[in-house]
Image (cartoon, rainbow over the protein chains, first blue to last red):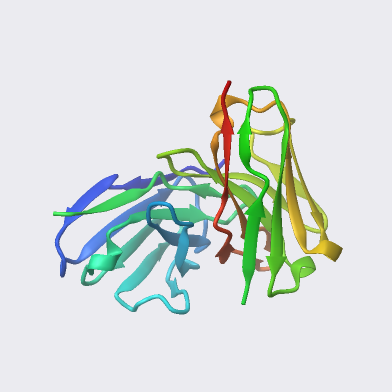
Length: 107
Length: 121
């Protein structure tokens, strides 16, 4: 199985900060990577697909980059609604795998 | 509007069985692969099973104990779970997408709200 490693596990930031989360795959997944946001008690929400494509309705302050094994999610200016847990996910294979999550907390 | 609504969760004892359902609406259900993904309390997301027209795949953690199926006429997805264990306690989500066909791989673009399965004596 393809392993996905996210960092950091927790991130403390303030409103307006630029935030970057990284995700590394154990083998090349081309650009078959998605990013999700999840809030407590809610289902995951798709933010980015195919590494850098913004899902319809997602604010433009979210962006994704990378290919192969190394990927990044960036929030250009953190807003109060963005405090949540973020997951990367590879869909290069039938057996999806997710990163362990990054919790973005208020500093 | 795409909708996925899970049902069938509940409290069961170790060793018992449970069948989850996912009712789909707002899209041509038969044209999409579907998946079950679970999330244990306070933990991350874990893929459980995949189904397309031609194939099924299972996570090692559930292989041999779980069967994924679908009824395209009823726009429904199912997950039959047997020999349940405490570590199967989780919210179970159905998610649309998955698989790679030709040059394209399909991401999970829509998720249901989930159904909680609790395995405890």
